Length: 110
Ligand SMILES: C[S@@+](CC[C@H](N)C(=O)[O-])C[C@H]1O[C@@H](n2cnc3c(N)ncnc32)[C@H](O)[C@@H]1O
Image (cartoon, rainbow, N blue to C red; front, top):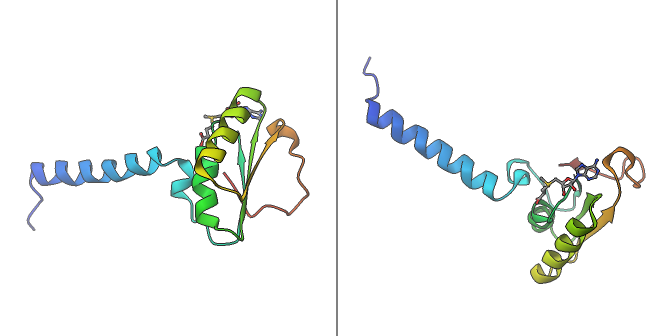
């Protein structure tokens, strides 16, 4: 059996980590399967990048709730939402330990 040469292995590993790095740069939500119409909750939504990327993926029939305890993060997230022109998103204030949403109203938690 022919073993791959060292440089081939290095190229393959670099390619793998390159893809992974791109996925991570797009946000953690890039690694999750999301479908049209789903309702998503981001616990600790920060500046809202994962929320906004997820909102595009669930489409106009879906919705994404961003949830954060920090006023400055909520302000930044809402500013990013306005600039992105995305409607199917709502940023809520609170702590992860007490989410003010009804049971079974969420399809995916990120
Ligand atoms: C790393 S950031 C999240 C980044 C975000 N996913 C994005 O796409 O930009 C983590 C956030 O979690 C929030 N956080 C941490 N602990 C929390 C808690 N117990 N309840 C609510 N928010 C919390 C912080 O305020 C911070 O904004």
